[in-house]
Image (cartoon, rainbow over all chains, first blue to last red; front, side, top):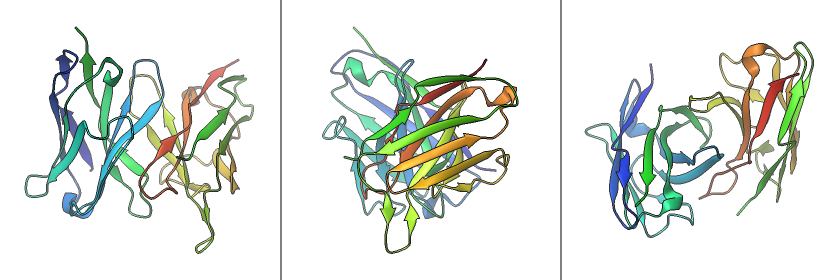
Length: 119
Length: 114
């Protein structure tokens, strides 16, 4: 079955960096586009970034553009999110999610990894 | 960007009764070439990741109970839970995937038992 396991979250000071990873299994990772979505404490869902299966296109929310970089390693079945210049408003649980075959919306989600940006 | 607005923000429904959640997009999410509405609905229970319920506005994801249904077209959409069960207590989100490079969610609707 599809499994997505995020890691790399933690506490970081404003202006700092963090790299999140998502280990995928149970499906042909190299065939699927992937998303990162976040959720601030007590708040709703916010889409963060998207990457095509072959890395041909990458898209970002305006709130993270220029600071975050999405990447993948299809040989290792891993998805990454490099987060630089972190702000307190980046505090959230970060989910990786696989897109559905029929459309680009996410179908399977990981359990998430928490990121806390605080001094 | 396409803005998704849900109503109400919360609702309390008696067990066995109908729950209706509305979602309005700031522009049409109906793609004329395939006549499909690029809308999905998610359910999120506390401490869990979101679960996909509905895509293409009205297609139930595999394994989703048939008491969940989606309807609407263009800019106005509805998620209906026909007979509310205790396990349906959750926050529900609509999401558009019409825009080529952005995916936006509504603010969420919290469903509770009256």
